[in-house]
Structures are given as C-alpha cells and as structure tokens.
Amino acid sequence: MLIASVDATLVTLLIIFAAVNVAALGVFLFFRLRDRAKREEVRHYGDRAEEKVARTIEREFPGAVLMNNVFLKTRRGTTQIDHILLCKWGLYVIETKSHNGRIVVEEREWTQIYGEKVIHFHSPVRQNNSHVIALRHALEGKRNVPRVNVQGLVVFTSRKVSFSRQVKGVVRLGELGRVIKGSSSSREGVTAAPGRRYLNSRQIAALEKAIRKSCARGGAARRRHERRVREIDRNARY
Image (cartoon, rainbow, N blue to C red; front, side):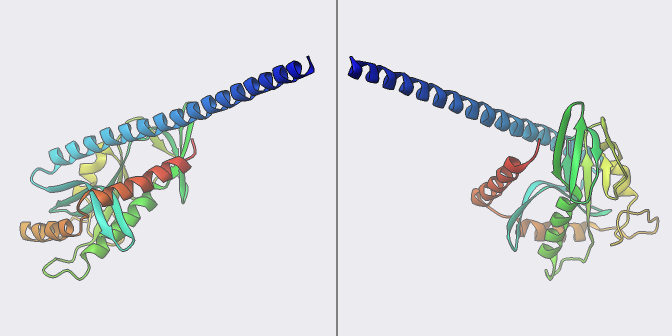
C-alpha cells in the first residue's frame, strides 16, 4: 500500500510539473508571438510610408534619379538607406518614419506617445546622419565625380504627428518638395538660398554611377543587415 501511495504521489507531482511547464511555455510563446506581431506591424507601416515618400518624390521631381531601399557598402559592412534623391537641387539622403501622435524629441532617443501607447526609438536624425556620412565616404576621392554636399532629411508621413520641439532637417511629407526646392547645398544645413548652384544632368549621371558602384550586391549583405535590424527590434522598448 505504501508503495502504491508513493507511486500515486509521484505521478501527481509529475503531472503538476508537466502542467506548469506547459503553462510557462504557453506564456512564453504568447509574448514571443505578440512581440513578433508588433515588429511586423511596424515594418508594414514602414513599408507603406516609404511607398508614400517615393510616390511624392516622383510627383514633385519628375525626371529626377530616385533610389529606394539602398544597401550601401561601408567600412563596417553595409547600411540601409530608405531613399537617395538626385535632382538639380542637390543630393539627399532621406529617412522615412511612419510614427504618429506626439513625438518627444531628445538627443539620442525619441518617444512616441499615441493614446496609451508609448514607444521609445532611436533618434532618426542621428540614424540618418550616419547614412549621410556613409554616402559622403563612398563618394570621396572618386574620379570624375563632382563635389557635392550630401544632405539629410527625415520625413514623417502621418498627418497626425506633432513634435515637442522643432528639429532641423525633420519635415512632414507635405513639406518635402518645398523644403528641397528652397534649400541650399550649404554644409550649415537646409536653409533658403535664392542664388544657389544647381546640378546638371551630367553631374547627376556621374553621381548616380558612383553611388550604384558603392551599393552592396547579392542577398548576403541584405540578410546580414536584416539580422542587425531584428536585433535592434528585440531591444526596442514598447
């Protein structure tokens, strides 16, 4: 009888242990799938936002050279750039953001507040500045390539976005064309310059050729970059 009682107790404990483990696994999978769904939702909105920006640029700058989703080779591997625009007004590196609501701007980290949702994300200005620097390095010392300042812009596509303070180089989608057409090639930033110099078709063609030569080819570089992005996503705070 004693042995039967011990066996019954052991079986009960094993069942409880298995049930606890199944429950823990279920909770883990729930939060894992929820986080993955959030990341996919962010990517989906990001893709749609980039399409909006591309369509706006094509409408505002017919005949201009627009390169989307560019993987540029750098000294540390590759970096992904949403848009590179080459037009008579200059050379622009454009970062697209789909965030809406109130954006609290800080030096390194920005915060999106939309209803009860609070999301912290890396400063897109700092992020895009690294892209600008990478493109400048890619063009340095290239033969038959005109010297031109590479300018950066961060474009927010949502109409329901506001900022805690103004930031140079951050615009809404409806302002994009006006800002570029009224901006200068000065290294001081995006400022009005009625007497500015424009790029001609030959210069634009030379710059485009040099940029395309600096692009990463094949899927390996893109997969490495996507792995880095997924790692950043996992560390994002929602």
